[in-house]
Image (cartoon, rainbow, N blue to C red; front, side, top):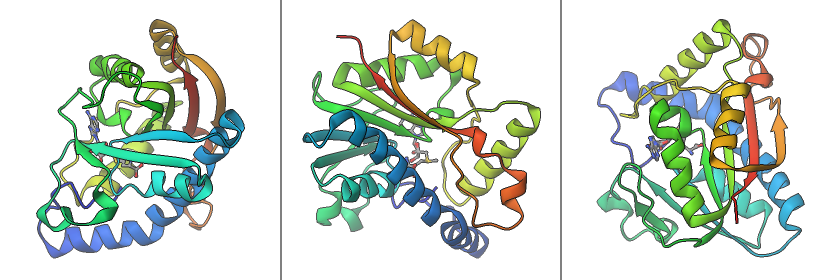
Length: 228
Ligand SMILES: C[S@@+](CC[C@H](N)C(=O)[O-])C[C@H]1O[C@@H](n2cnc3c(N)ncnc32)[C@H](O)[C@@H]1O
């Protein structure tokens, strides 16, 4: 991840790791994920104006990439942190609101789409349904990007990648990944209807060794419709 909000851990090692991760992974990741999310939204909304909320926004690069692909979309953003003083006057962060853990500070059905991009696996398993339900309260559709830990190897590798990506920041790594069955069960309980899915997203094809160790099958994006 990359975030100007989460308080960076001190030390040259953390700074170097953040810079390396940014260059080798994050830039490619946000481009591919932003374009992938935009393709699902384009098919569903067919160019109609769209109000979106990026929950757990990090540096907002995913929703900004979506906005670049879908000029008819307007995005707001929230995360767990207060806005650092340095960003208070930055117009690019005027769309940001801090959320309390589990509560999204917006009125019912404010948004067409509420997005969680690699956020839910940072949330305790027993709190995931409540957070998704809170998103249903404020939105008509949900866009969820997360990981499928298909076996023990996937679980270990995803955990390692999460630890490396989040180490420079104080973001908790809980590794509460989904399996396809557990995710479908959650959708059933919350009465969410799948509109479309992208499964098998190759985020690391530019990295010579990692591309063989990391399976695209661990990445999915679902566009879901909330119950009326
Ligand atoms: C891996 S980063 C993803 C950032 C961004 N969405 C992206 O895809 O680049 C996970 C983000 O989730 C946020 N987060 C963690 N727990 C959360 C919670 N309970 N509610 C909302 N956001 C949370 C973190 O602060 C962090 O910004």
